[in-house]
Image (tube, rainbow, N blue to C red):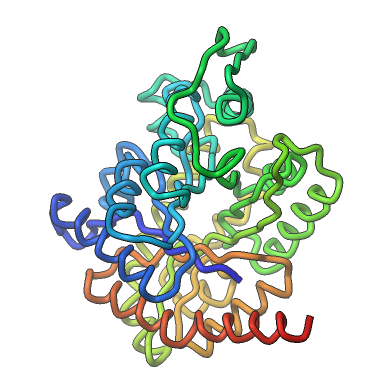
Length: 365
């Protein structure tokens, strides 16, 4: 099991961003010290709720690269729509890979934010085809010299990318999706997958996501010569504390804010996108009535995972048995001091439990 520290540099407590960004970088340095495998920044635009405050993950990742040496640097996720030209994305991937000495990882997405699509004049019904064509361009740019492309959205003559990645032929590729259809797409292309909002469907949906992804991967027609069989589940409120009571007390408000943000985001998006795209979110209305019930949301799925080291170890081992290779832990929306304490709890108690298991497995193999 790999552990990914995800931060959106939440400034929900009123911390000004010029200070909060620097705190988030300090937290990433701490995550490396505590044994996390990767850090990740998302790409979110125009959010005024102060919960998701990173619109330029490549710049945040570069800042972290300058202060770390081993931890992987992942964009979770760069939005592959027309306003992010795929050649520019490829250039930024390659530049980060050079600056970090081969530590870049890239996850892509179609966007789940209606205001972003409105501001950048993106038709929600075209996001799937724009993402798919962008991915083809990026892989070609990173693996062919020169590369070219002829498609619906881009006509690119023979072109040489500058610079090229250290990792050959390219850094690990992932696709972030909240739907079974998206996970099947990721598996079928040989991409790693970041499974999203599991709260509406609960633990049954978590298992369905794993089954769908691995089944598709078994029959993959890979997009690239290098495949990346890795399934992660996104945990949007993660926190570790000495007792369940303390964990709930410290994470309760953050969890509620995050859940309302997600509920409102998907409700708005469903108005504009094809109905089939978000049919799996039908149960979201049932969650509305229980948002403030921490015990309920914490038990319903791993989307909220708040508790003691023993509680979290048991939960992550359950996910491991279900076919997950990573947990993406959004330890954010708390005070900086609380985030640092939580990271250190994970590093002292939770992560070592899995490292010991991996070591024993290697010895008996």
